[in-house]
Amino acid sequence: MEANTLLKNTVSISQFNKGQAKKIFDEVKQTGMKIVFKNNEPECVLLSPDKYIELMEEIENALDYAMAIERIESDSKIYSLDDIKDEFDVTEKDLDEVEDDEVDFV
Image (cartoon, rainbow, N blue to C red; front, side):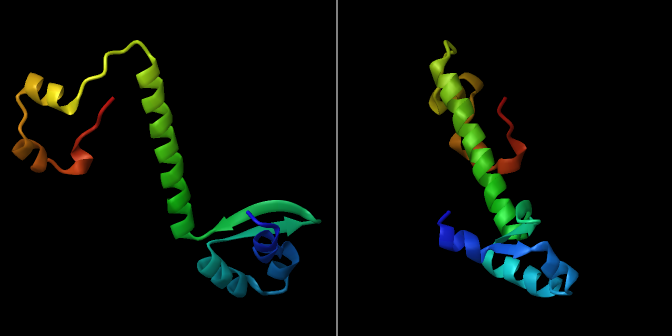
């Protein structure tokens, strides 16, 4: 994060004590985040719900990627989707009928 952006996204805890919480929360909704300082030290980070969801999705994607790389680099056999469909007699129509959240690969 650029220094200029970082400075714009900082807020002192004393501003909360001065009754500016609503203003600060409105800014969080607009910018996505604020870093709260107390005694010139970062104390916490306020995130908008959208920014929080975005960050959690990025973490999940990174973990999935790391797991995929680990599996590729291991001695485990890698199966293509076609191999799995053939082995379990699954068609494209079968897959289309399944909701995304119904499938869990371990």
